[in-house]
Image (cartoon, rainbow, N blue to C red):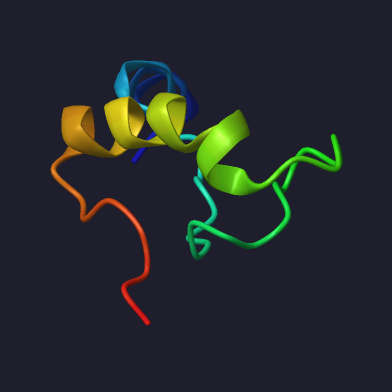
Length: 59
């Protein structure tokens, strides 16, 4: 595989930003001091739904 095809392959790949899995009542990963459910849960759920992953840890 040549360098051009490697670069093209890399540029065409879809990068997925990792989203941490947290319990709803744990502190948010962003460091705001709020509970995860009141801070980033909805935004992270939208990202996970877009990529077909489960919402949050259930226990």
